[in-house]
Length: 251
Image (cartoon, rainbow, N blue to C red):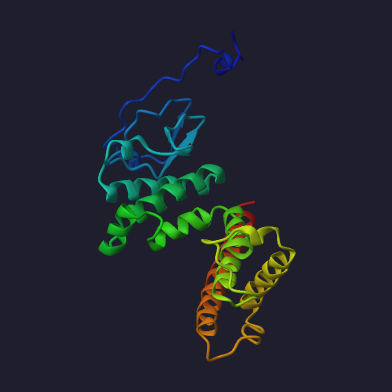
């Protein structure tokens, strides 16, 4: 009936556009695409920077929006051009939710097909070890403020304290591989807290090795771990600040 939104009907499906390739949308002042399923639509070689998308269905992969062109293995350079155009269009339309999705996809293309051959090989074989892979893992390319907080919590309450305890930076030399009975020892938990505090001190660069003999191996290893701790924490805190600024800038 007139005025009724057909999309409220359980059996209603948007009409599907299978191809919008090689269309010179740029020759038009503005193009609006409304209420259309784009889940099987290709935009390869089309100029879409002037297109405004409203109430359309995009394909998804792993919970993220994606272009069907990427699922069809279109040339990475063309995908980058399309994602840049979509990011620009949704930014200008103040549709920041979708703009963030296109930003994520653009960064994925840069990570997987960047000009740095070593980085590209690393990203393909070991996706979490390249710089772009670590950027994604730690903050979803600056989009997630929660991920840096989680990593800070895990590293500073678990990983770095374990290192400090194993090398003798704090308390006795614990050997986790041989004996876990120390977990019920109250002295261990006191040493654990001291190890967490030592990690915090490494972030502030204060009193790092005051209680260690500089001639020991434990001292040299502790200095190295302290430096690594400082670098990692500084990077994660920076990513947290960047993501928060990005969120507020879009409001």
